[in-house]
Length: 484
Image (cartoon, rainbow, N blue to C red; front, side, top):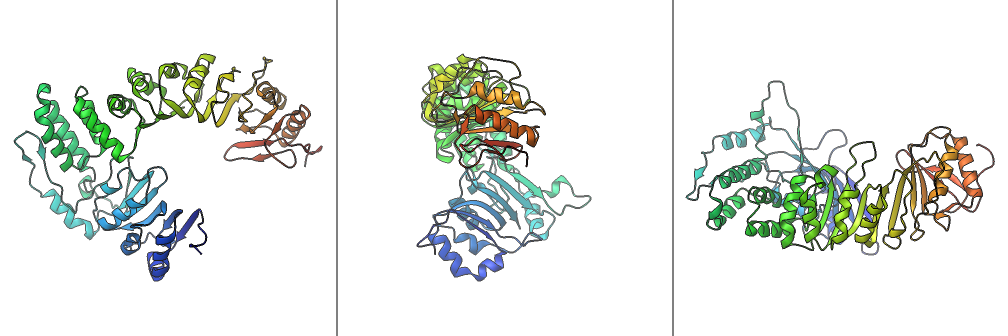
């Protein structure tokens, strides 16, 4: 079938033995398929201990996209094969390790990684014993202490942070029974400590040996960020960290204030790099944020984390966008003022996806023509306010937050206040609604009478739409005149 048709997704749930029995079909699939692939190579009840090596190595040279893998890996060749079809945006890995294994080849190649180990088994014991009896690091002439890692030692990628599951632990097990999966991080911290003890004016002489020590430690781009933050005034270090980040990740990801400070130092050397921000307001209220926007000339995804249930406006964080060359590709946050809207509009790309939470009606006309998708989340308006029509094109989605029981008339008023002048929405959603079925019917009738419509067909109705959401579908056909 594959030569003629390419399904979007193929999901395979078989034991390794069953898949191996269909070896020729599996090899043909990996060579022909170009869509998304999910692999569950485990028994239905107990995690399979059977090797998947030959099966996974068929992925080398494949043009498929691995979105999920659940199975056992025991060789570097299989790790490399998995990495060749994995991406940071979509791949979720759950890997059982039958013995210590270096997984650094997966660095920057997954969305999530779970490594499952059984360190009390015999297959681990000899390796753990040999690594603990290794000689102490030798001091190099430059003062950086390094130790070449044993090829059999376990290594986990540094970023994104992986999960480590320890299985079959027994009473009396100690920390020493665990392999040092994070040797790289320890080695990098050792290098940083030694670097900080050195004369800052002698960096040029230290640079070659610093690179050697970091390479021997298996350092990732994220480790170089930490080195950069320890020596923030070294242009050569900032430029190198920027270059290795672009090579590994093709983007800068900001999730904390330290990330923000590191990216601010690197951006002058990689100004058009994609920037993804998923951080709190506290992290972004820093001079480093203004430096990022000063130097950045590429696309930016800005998601301001909402850690508190109350309204937390980010207008002050948006103001530097006015003088920036950054282009907002997506935005999610709370905005209180029209000045905040104007700042966002000044940097929004024409294809932007914009999700805004407001506490009161705002004039959003500045966003007209500035987005491909607009979602506005508002509380129920219980008092009369002036109309604040949303931009009409493209059609927006209105989300009404937490309608209480008996508030259907106020919900209707809220929808009418935000209704575009054309009276049509892409969609209307009730989030965490306590309205009864009868109240929803009355709400639909009132809105339909006022000529409010959504981009739907069929009868006017309400439907579940994801977790804790109700979708109002207002069509040309009126709602039922009685409760079902």
